Length: 202
Image (cartoon, rainbow, N blue to C red; front, side, top):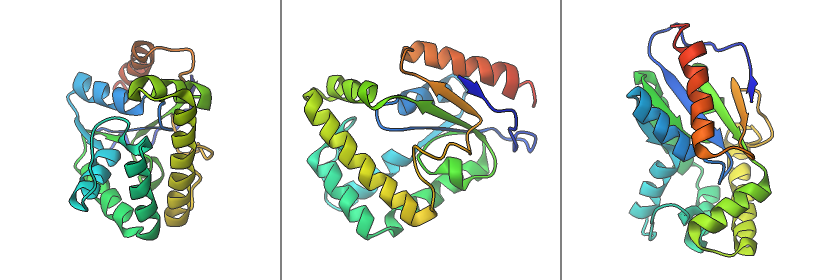
């Protein structure tokens, strides 16, 4: 776990927490648990994009949809229509302005100046095994979908905003290597930081 001292934006009043990490790192699980523990509103960029996909006629379901053929097809549409992501990101920015929120998002750590930003660092092998187990697919399929999804997603955000998802970690205040940790251990470690370093500053 790496702690970076500068945590600008916490003295302005309302709490904003951004949770980020590549697919299979556990970011959505962590963000929901933080939201529940601290009584914060939860917003997911992925859920918002799924809502857009559903309106466009895609058959959307829960976890694992992004790694499916249907999810990858929607990723292709997003690459040719970047306004889809701009619209979703603007919704999350507005939620951040209202404060007292946890954002599960791949873009907000770069687009927001304020907030406490957490990166969950997980190797591709660990993430592929988690996705294989979660979605009931073979490990080879998990690697295939994971790599294709990330290639396209990285390309979208590089075109839109110029940052390199998964490579540029400069926005983050806390970086947690989750390879050897359970979801409970990650949650406890992050809460320890929030309780003792973030909330005390306020």
